[in-house]
Length: 358
Image (cartoon, rainbow, N blue to C red; front, side, top):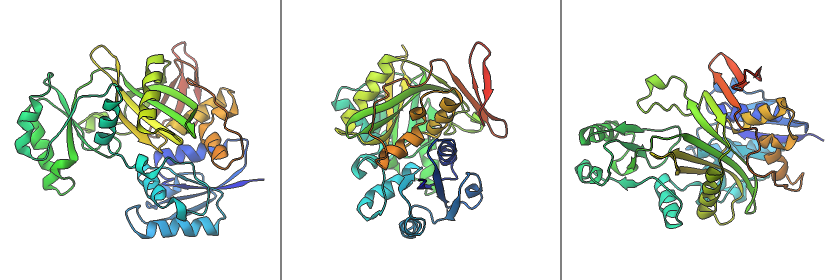
């Protein structure tokens, strides 16, 4: 029997990948999707599509509830983190199954997360806050390296991030966004520069039990030359890596931030000068943009169907299967995912193996 799934934010990169992963699953899904952008709503392979207000609009949740009732939705997946937080806050009023962490876990910002991890001896980047431009000079003096990252306390895709070397650069960067009314002084934090690998560890948990995880290194970003930070949100080239230290640190980080993790968790790490992995961020209740895409890779490689994590996540969330732990490192080491706008998506290996998957 088919199941009715609702994917919000389905026109975003993560939403499109999630829908594509469900479409190749052995289970039959009828997929409804939403987005506030009428153009991007044309991208995912949906059975039913609906335009909604932005998640900040009070009518957003009303529309979601209306779709759930109309399409007899069996499971709701809010794709972007911002929409997951809205759904989680009103979870008792949502008349369908979900698979999300608690609301208070989802809405933690980067600074709150850093403080929790530090108390639990998880390696984190040195971080300081500023509340005015006058505090920048004394704050920067607390860092050994000349280079520091200026970042927002919340937001995805490297939002308002910039690598700075001088007090003046930091002040100018913060001033631009405050003067434009996009941010407040207190929204920013200064963080040590970590020059090593850019790592992402994605994991799925159920009632405190690790179900599956995999780790990849981000190698290239699209149009990075036009972004001041060099980061544009989603990688064009990434590589599966197997690193026990990353696995251990990521697991400890998640359990430190949530004593009973439930749902999907995305941990970002950067290597220090010796390439020791340092946690920079945890996104709870979020699939990274390519998490579901690796499930399509898994299908093309003929791996266990449960390694299509979008499908397995939905099945667990609807109680269709008993959660079975697949362990860590569920995808083969050294496998590259290469993609770009209008060029397709490929899996590749150093030995010359190459297959187009989308």
